[in-house]
Length: 237
Image (cartoon, rainbow, N blue to C red; front, side, top):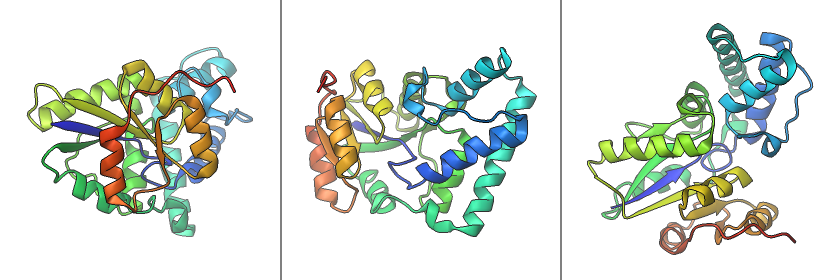
């Protein structure tokens, strides 16, 4: 049995833009923290938990308290819900994502899991609005760790339990960010990139062996899942 682990923002849903807007606005409104960098790749770890902790440490010289995290997440989700009502187009699925997930999880040799750097409540909301049913798929989110490596390791354990497997023959990580490539390299997982021509070049330079635009061609998805390798050393070009 093989396992395909999917990121959410930019991989299954077209929510990168609205997620960034709401994250920044929620920090400002909930805690008065403004002017943070949105170059997420420059943070030690690109997860909602790690970014929040880093921003608090940089601006307030301390880690956030649980009540502060709850206040921030509550405002963040409220803003996402507001944007959904005003402009649901910001929450579209990556073309073919929902259908692909359903078909892939019915394959004899493949099972599906979700691993995202989003907070759980916001990640589930974005999937729901995009029309992607999480159902009982194993999942892990920012609450499970500061690093994406921790999050992926958690979802593998949950997938083993959910699908009653002592191990998986092949574990492929699917994502759209530079941090996704690096995480796959660190964990020695084969990686499949998702993105447009510009993103394709960036992911290729980062070491991805295969990058597809979307999930329209299910046959291509299956072929790439079988062919992809652990990301190569990042190009210096």
